[in-house]
Image 1 (tube, rainbow, N blue to C red):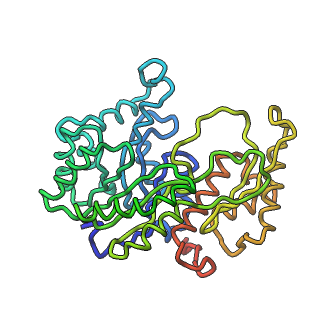
Image 2: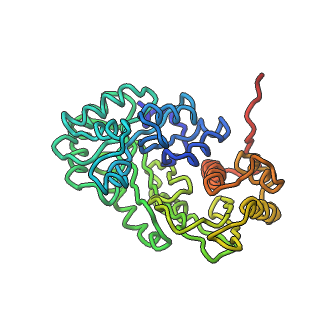
Image 3: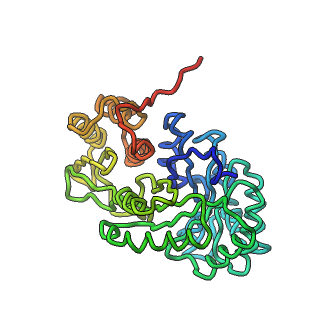
Length: 376
């Protein structure tokens, strides 16, 4: 038993994209943090690689031999620019590998066989075929690793009912149920009673070992602002949902401070910005180029340095928090060659700090030891 076992000590289930920023942020966490995080990865190709094995190898590089949850990022296939234009995938084997995992034949047997080969991976139920979903959950449960049921607004009610029937028929209880709300706003907080009622209904039907409510409220634009703050509404929502459901076990989940719906490219050169996550909000400082269409040589680095220098003087800056992300900001303030010099690196720093802050949400920051033991 995994989710229902006494050894389940995980405190945080972030849903992380297979992207350079998110994988680097996770990789650079303290090892003791990684022991308490159970990441969920929607699988897709790693950057420009040709094979799916590069993705699983990148996961291992980030977390070692620890457990992780697997599902499929089907947007990698169906929202690919070349596929949308021509109906064909780019000439990379990984697209066909991912497509084969989504084949529903024989209870999503390809997915089951793939999960069988990934001994550290915990399977999520794949959706898209009512005829096969009952058999799928029966197969996945035989792996003995627990099963993750992640549902969102697009999930078919018919398929959910068939999964619930399979669970009841097979007397399964080693389950994690994730209610995925995707991108949310402050207004979503008003829906807490409905969300609580939905969770209670699921609990009556199948009694999962653990529940998570996952979402992201990270903003899409900071245009026009020099500095400011944004509330972490996913944390506020989670706290309110669990407050009146004391008899249900919850584990916090979110998108690791990334957006649930990724912003497509375009719109010119983004202005340099560094974010600093706290427990309940994100602070940011941003500076504009003199000419955003044509920054002068070295201007980007100058702006990141100026932002970092301003940031570490803010009253919310915690100098005792010795994380990779905070140290990267400090290096940026010193004009170090390894400093933040791109939006991707700034994003990695933010996610690294955010993961740590949410993992230790209920602990005093200055009491947390972030130094790993050194060995020669």
